[in-house]
Length: 267
Image 1 (cartoon, rainbow, N blue to C red):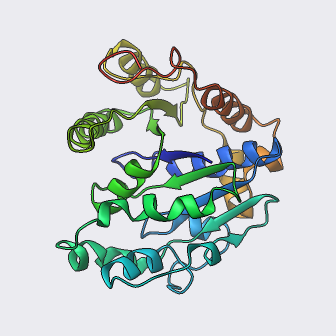
Image 2 (image 1 turned 30 degrees about the vertical axis):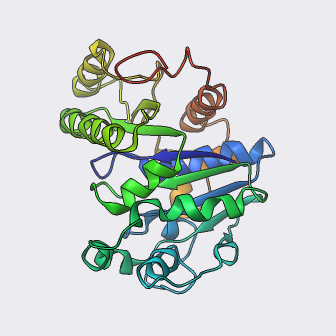
């Protein structure tokens, strides 16, 4: 099972949209996909019609059991979605209190790492949606994945959040002893605006990131697909946004070392 984490240290940049539509592409290609929602806001959970206020059966059970040193059966947590071959472990708003409760508990940064191997036989891919703030949940997502996907909205404030994320990756690498491959994905690109064009140019001038050479354009059909609770890549695969995510998935699936170099050096 390949595990990809979708993370950005800013809200509203397209993290959940990226998870949903990558999952749509992968399932359309026949892959079995597990999505995990680690964001207490539960955007991914709500996208597929589940209630993040419902704690039972959510990812919160894994962390709550770890705090209390109790056993939990992770294999009963995934739920079916309306998309064939796509299942989800939902989020819960109760996750917001997790940092305070487990601050002194050892091993809380590797809860997902301990449980995901029990699901490997059921899925080909695992996609993890993260909260925008650094904390124990994000550390879990980084520790569990082999590749980090970083949606980056084409606007100036998002550029500042990218610097914070790179510092986070450096800290993670120093503590874990491994450097995590990443791919920065320009999202919400509107060629009509100077802000989008200038931001994209700034990204392309940077040498400290691995940047996807294409963009995910602004596409109103992405919002309509969210309203319907389906991936645009399954509902209207010919839409501009859907085609962009299909090409992104091509890049991620063909994760050769020459394509996804590590920040700061060759992979």
